[in-house]
Length: 110
Length: 110
DNA sequence: ATAGTAGCTTTGTATCACAAAGTACTTTTT
DNA sequence: AAAAAGTACTTTGTGATACAAAGCTACTAT
Image (tube, rainbow over all chains, first blue to last red; front, side, top):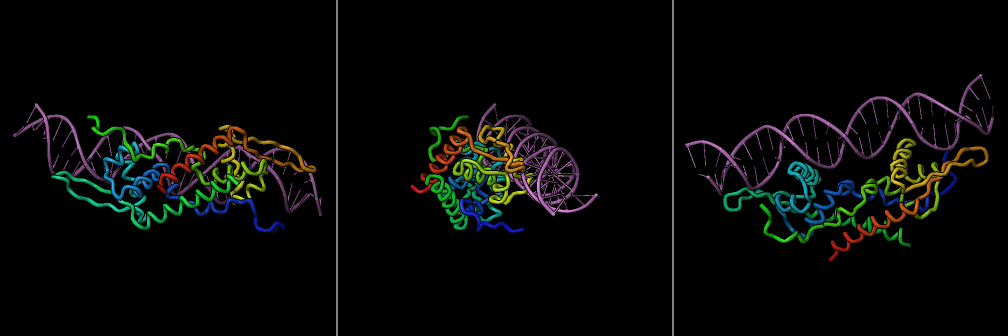
């Protein structure tokens, strides 16, 4: 049986527009830093977000797999250095996520 | 060895202020509805958020356990009816969460 | 008597998050 | 030369989370 009501008003239907990739506190933090900073290295991210090596690596891999983050490996002096940067795709996806959150907040305030 | 830098600027330190209870898409949706609606019953929430019975029940229990939601059981006619409502604590916690998200968004825009 | 409604609980599974330990290679210290 | 430490992981193991599906209880409607 189908509801007699028209499709539900008062429904936060834009919830579906939230990006699952950014629901995690850690990945939200990573993207927040990366969209501002242009590039950050392993150590800096680890320090900023208070992560263990493994945790940083695996969350970053998730963002890489989605094409939201790009990795550049280089040497500084003779030490290996890994730089992470947000891609255009990542920036757009993150911006869209924030827009959706904004809508939610606005709707709450009205 | 301690970093030579002063405590990190450019750090989204308010990430810690995000409420873990509202990181879940489902519980975010529940609270969004409940802070607006004063009270909603099982069927309505299930329909609005597209949840299975068990999923609704367990997420709601999580919010109950935190004191964010209150349950009222009654009969409508002779049918059992379960109403859920956001508590004051829940409303405040949710509002605080949204404020934190707002800060994050503002910081991103600047 | 049978089926249906309302609201769960239980069970099982897949995914997630995370710390800790291990790895490979290099550099620095002793 | 040997030992310690840095860099960036990967692997392993564990506990938490999310979810669907099925079962269950106590009605009510037919």
